[in-house]
Length: 305
Picture 1 (tube, rainbow, N blue to C red):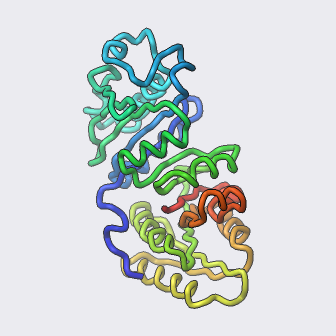
Picture 2: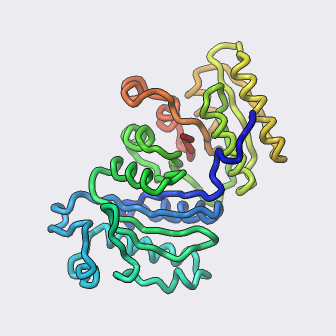
Picture 3: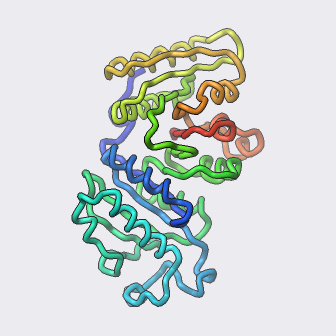
């Protein structure tokens, strides 16, 4: 498996979506930690409803309105909370700690509001406020800034989460369902003969190097026969890990792919798998392996696009 170093960019950009201080604390903390580990630029985005829901306060805020906090957009309140949280996560970052949430650091451009923060460990931090439908605005933000990975929290309504987020975002997606930051997970890469396997393996190697997590590859066939495509992909994945001095265990199992993925993952793996190549209509009607796997498991899942 020949892997170009450009499969994963040298400089990564991660986007973390938050909804409120009440529900998004763990997601923001983990998004910040993950970005720090990978020296990645970090965007924190809040997507609110249209302005008429907020007494006429629009995302197109003027500097005058930003200086007079009598009319506060709920999204700005959430970003203000996010700034305070980020400051507590990195007390050693004096430049970040000195930032105040005011018009000196708030900019309007490209139909959204941005708060620019100092770099931390080589990565730039931005807070972003957008208005409109959630998935559409996340997609626009990812396309505008070229984010490599979107980090989102788990959801009680997994089916809605899958169809609303995973299918339509143009970046890879990490779903932090029941993620435990102190836990050492094993990386479980789902390897087959699809084009996405190549990129999944590259991400798996990077994560293993950064976090020192054990790596397992799992190849599942519905029959007892593993064709040259499956066998070749698994062997090439193993060779790639070994070329980077990463130990890997290989597993070949027979059965229904999604059920096998879920049973094997248990509660101590983080799953890495490629995004579906089915078009959105077929995914909606018939589902896809990533969507079904997300619905069947409670462990974190990284879906590579």
